[in-house]
Every structure is written in C-alpha cells, then in structure tokens.
Length: 271
Length: 271
Image (tube, rainbow over all chains, first blue to last red; front, side):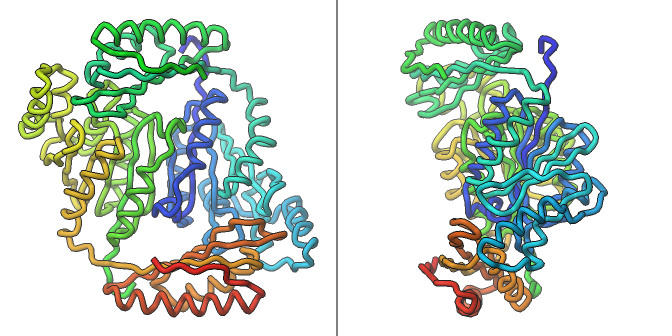
C-alpha cells in the first residue's frame, strides 16, 4: 500500500495450558496489539502443546513464508516440558549451545539464595547457535533472539509480567531500530438499528475507495431484532498526520452511510 | 495410553481482530476446555487474519496430519471478510454450494423484519459441498459440519453467545455419539517456598511413574525470592472412578515430594 513495506509477523504462544483452555491467551492479545501498533502486519497466532517436534514443524512451516518476525512466548523455563528453544534450534537445523552470558545471569540469581546450579537450572542457559540473550529482569529464564535468513526470531517467557517487561524494555526498542515505519490511526463508534449485512455494502464501498483503511464491524446485539454494531476503523500510513486525517474522512463517510440506512450513531471514541 | 484411542483435535479461531489483539481470544479457551473435558487431545489453536488463501493453506496443512476433529470459529457472517467456508471448501477442493436448508432458515429470520434477501444475506447459506447445517438459534449465520477423510470439520460463528449455544445444544451431543470415551479427573493446589526448578525433578519422576497423568506447574510468584506455584494434575482414563482414584494418589505423592523440599501446601481444590 502506497509503497510502504509490509512487515509480516507471526506469534507463537506455546504451552499445553493455553491449548487446553486452562488459561485465556492474554499474551497473544498483548503481542498482537503491540506489534500492530508498531506497524507490523500480524498474520497469525499459533498455540501448540509442549511437543518439541510439533513446535519445530510449525515454526519451519511458517518460516518458509519468510516473515520478518516470529515471536514465541512460553516454554523457556526449567521443566521437562519447556522445549521452545530446542524446537527453534531444530527448525533452524542448528545445535543448542550453552550460552555463557545466559548461564552467568542465571547463576547470579540462584547464588543470592545460595541455591546450586542443578541441571534443570542450567537448561535455561541453552540457546540455538547464534542466539543472543534477552535479559529477564523480572524472572529467571532469559529470552533469546536469533536470526534465520530474513526472519528475526524472538523467544520470551510465558509469564505475562516477565514477557511484558522484557518486551517494553528491550524488544520493542530493538524492533524500532529495524526501521518499521508504518503508523496507523484508529477510530471506533457504535451504531444501532443497522444489521451487519446492511452495513456490509457500505463498508465494502469505502474499502474500495480507501485502500489503506481497515474497517471491521463487530455484532454486539442481535442481527435482526436489535442490531447493534461496534464499528472499528484503522488507517495505515507512513506518517501519523496523514493517517489521522484519512481516518477522520473515512469515519465521517461511514457514519453518513450508516445513518442513510436508518442507523443511530450511539457513541464515538478516538484512540 | 492403556489402549485408549487418542482423539486429536485442532481449533481455528479466525479473524483479524483476534490476531491483532483487538479482542482477547476467549473462544479458544472455551473450546479448548470443552474439547479436553470431552476427552479430545487438543494439539493446537491457530488464529489467522481474514485471508481466504492463508486460511485454506493452514487448514490443508493441519488436515494432512489426519486429526479426528477440526473446529473453526469466526468468519461465517455476511461481510466481505467472512471467508471461512470458502477457505474450507478450497482446502477440501470442493465447490461452495447454496444450501437450501440454510437459506430457508436465514430467509425466515429476515422475513420477520420484512427485510429482503440481499446477496450479503444469501452468502451465509453457501456451504462446502457435502456440508450439513448446524442450526443457530441465537444469531443468523448457520454453522456447518463437513467430513474430509477421517476428519470432521465443524465451523461455528465467532460471536461467543452463538458459538456456546450451538456447541452445547448441537455439537457436543454429536461429538459424544462419535464414541469419545476418555474421561479425566483433575486436582490443583498451591505450594509456596519451592522454586519451579526444584519442583521439576519431582514432577518428572511422577510423570514417569504415572503415564496417564498430566502435571503442570504455573509460577505465580517469583522463582527465587518468593516462589509460589499453582500445581495442576490431570489423570486420564477409560472410566471416571479409576481416573479419580489415580488423581488422588498422584496428588498425595506430589504433595509429599514438595513438602520434602520445604514446600508449604497453601490450598487445595478438587474439581
């Protein structure tokens, strides 16, 4: 769109507890949102059970499409089922190597409590060949950053507090350095009295007119007896002022269109 | 495990709003949990943007591993970006056909409000060849059930209220008819004072002893300075009484093991 490079990203949220519904996958929402805000085009989120072969196969499958970024969460800890970095190494056909920097940071943390470096603890210092340590200032398991061709692979822990701290203090600044430049403006409002199927035609025409816009309607009420739609507009651009200006234009045309078929605009929000 | 057939399932939660983190994926947690309770072994959850080629490619990739069940949510509505059934048809290399039963149910719903059958509304009645209608008594878009070799593909709307109603009233009874028999018992408790890396060794030994058990530790506190673990035990079996009995055994051994390394059992829950 308008000569802007599209930065493609994938998210892997790993762990049997996510797949079996024991926890709600808030990490996926966090990363999807942060990456979208940064200007990445997130194509998908994959959650897998703690099976090293399954994970490495899926990573290989996604890497074949040459995304710019693949972020994994979960599976970095000391337990037998923490297999993420083993799976990454397998997908990249490289060895897992003891990373001295990682080992040092882990040792320092256990030293404080005079706890020995058991094999389970040392395990957290093994990284795919060529991997760089991502410091974990909240918990114990370090993250890892490794390159595979055009793809940067970033592996972070699954504990949300650790993930978010590492993302904001270390990963996001590094990603900005890559030159991701696309920004977007977003708007949303609620409209009652218009079934989603009536809104569809109006949305379709606007999307044809504005090729850098994303418009989505979320049905909140009942399609026929009490239609209520949350309408969400995103406009992408190289610069924020163009994005904001275009978003306002799209918003006005959209509201006018919905009102012309009997819609009542119920609330508006600029983000 | 003990001659019990493992029923493999995959979940696809489709929609750009899920991938970009605009909504938290509670549908995935709901389906993961319901399927696990039914006795399915859910291997993964895939969320993808509303791109018909991307979705059909991923469905084909997962179908190649011959799972018993593939459930999709989202992308069944009247808008241009509702492409799930088109993607399913493409993956199965069959045509999308107007389903008369689906059309009748959609027409009846709009007739109540004297609304015409626009192309956007008729679109919801197109299903992959061989597809059966799953009635939607809450919303408008019908679900679809279609077979591909050994795999049953079930497509449901993404609106949680509709999904859950259709699941409980129609899908789950049908799945029980397939003969999924594995049941499980679960237990959980909290232990303080044991770092996850110390618990790991105890858990590993128990998993070796009980090959039908699943034990997972979730760190809630800080691994070193204030370790707090939520411990979760699941035991699978053909019959519930064996599962319950074994779960109690595993629970007792696990608690004893954790106490022997200084753990304080802080709370216990039978589910």
